[in-house]
Each structure stands twice: as C-alpha cells, then as structure tokens.
Length: 106
Image 1: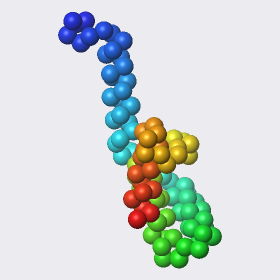
Image 2: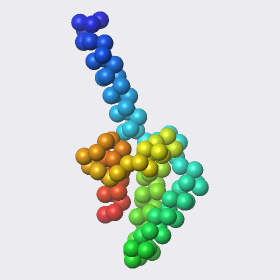
Image 3: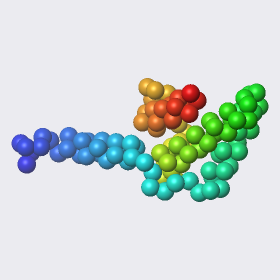
C-alpha cells in the first residue's frame, strides 16, 4: 500500500484536505433559522440606511447577503462566517465571504 499511495502521513493530509474542501465549498445543509435571518437582515438594512443608501438598494443588498449567507454558510458554518474577513487571499471562509459580498454589492 505504501508504494501505491505514498506515505501514510501524506495520505492523511490528502484526505483531511479533501474533506475540508468539500465541507467548505458545498452549500450548507441547515439554513439559518428565521430569527437569525431576520436579525441579520434588519441589522444589515439599518447599517446601509445609516450610510445614506436608499431603502430599495438596502433591501436588495441585505436580501442578497442574508440569503447567500444562509445558503452557503448555514448553521454549520455560522461561527466561521462571524470570524471571517472579506479577503480574496484569505482562508476558504474569507474567500467565500468576499465572493458573496462582491456579488451582492454590484
């Protein structure tokens, strides 16, 4: 087996990486609860309105963000979302956050 698959530590690393990639790139299985969704949407909208954005634009952006976060991070990755920074060169959660924010802010 060693000859076919390489060293045991390399195989463990490969499996760990693949599981990490699949877990982070797949859509969440458990979307946000309505309480979390509504709370995020309302906080987002309030923040956008304070920045002098129109109500229509605020609604659109916050709907997009709330829906995408619920779908792509879900409850499983909620804590990762809260600690992520929108960075195209960061970890996988930072990249996911950056992609969502960039798409929703267009």
